[in-house]
Length: 214
Image 1 (tube, rainbow, N blue to C red):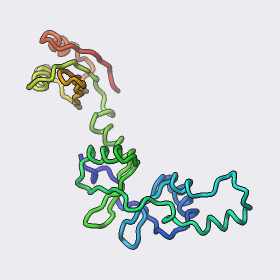
Image 2 (image 1 turned 30 degrees about the vertical axis):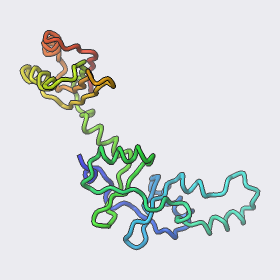
Image 3 (image 1 turned 60 degrees about the vertical axis):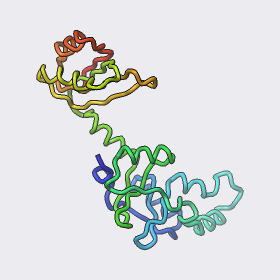
Image 4 (image 1 turned 90 degrees about the vertical axis):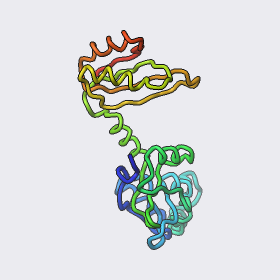
């Protein structure tokens, strides 16, 4: 799964010399929380709602309304934006984009291809991708199996599932810190997994959680 599949293409952009009042209004009107900032066709920054609030005068200020409006009219997006933000390409994997966001504490990444801004990927897009990857909108049964961290364990489990004529909607592995065991989380395309779960337990696997999913 790649950024290009889930990004917002050709996002709304603003120039760096736009007054922050206009940028705030644009965000409100389009119900968005961040905007890429461009100079011509070149990406020069990104600005968020929080950035704009940070540079705006406090409501507790002693300035008059006239003074406030004058001050706000002089503040521009370039005074608030993050300059030269981290970017990704459409071919960047979603997991890499998620890691970059997490490690840099940002909620979005501009997407650049051949020096041109082509999209933006946000934390909401990452959530959408995770939902699709895990098959959360498909009816089935979620099963968690305690497994050893050994070669072939996934193949053994999936062979039992195949033998019972059940399709796997999604599969994820979670290794414990000590590395000797973990959990296999499966979403199965069945509402009645009883027989295949019994077969797994007969083979020594411990089923730790089962729930229907609709």
